[in-house]
Image 1: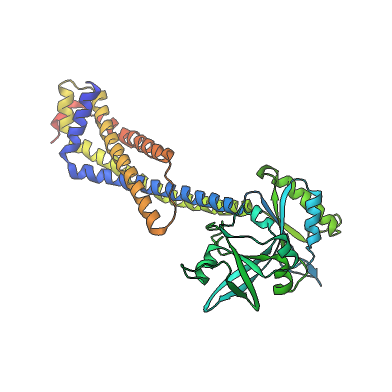
Image 2: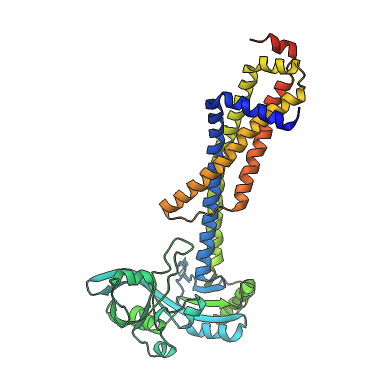
Length: 406
């Protein structure tokens, strides 16, 4: 018997019991759709992590004030008060792999304008900060080195701050915002950056000259951080080594003494978030795989029941010349049809489901062609694997015994 005829017989046999066939396909549809949605969620999460990391700057390194030992008690990070602007200048002079540097002095503040207020963080920086973060002023201007030198009361706002302090029709440029007891003039607006790697808001940004924040708001002489932009992502490790040696030498840290500073860069947080995302994706994929396995076992059970119910039919076919191989192929093709239909419909359902989830939760869902190909390939493999045993059982039936079956 040719493959076309065997396939026609298989389709006819499946059509005789439409309810059973539909339920068998449904199990595969649910399993494949669950796998597709899981992959889409995982890929979307990975894409968001990459975007958030790029928004910070993949070449960014920040030198953070570390802990100190006071009377045998170690303070936490940022407890040290010896990170100075001279350290920044030494890094600029002695580390050729660095392209941009900016000091950072920040603190939580309540921003007030008229009858509107917003809790945010004021970041004291230099004009190079925008180059480090790859930000361009979209309205107005940024502050200058002269503003830093003169401790000018000027500020640059992110979109979130603008939305919470100004009406949509208002122009923030030239307006005055009160930061604690200090009034500052808005001179520039930043473009939208989106979320951070850790789920924060890049647009909740309020920038001022670092000298203004350092002297007039916080009243300190030291820096909280030094932000550094390396020449490229490939030299980050070497740049960190050079920075560490320079700062240790300036702070007179002899061999064996721990650093009183920390070196951080966004990829550390991105790697942590990505690892957590992969763990969750694997958990969801495991649950989806169990669902697909249950559907596959259901197909095998249905095929075994079908073999039992059609024993007499199999005997008649074998009595009139059908070989065991023909019978085996018929039942194998039936199983493959069930799983292929389930795989195709499951892929469609997974695509639609992932889009619905994306629209409802506002979370990006990335469904790659590779995921669709894998889903269809897996469903085909399931049809062969779980359909082989029922097909083999049908092929082994003795024609005489099968004909005597009721």
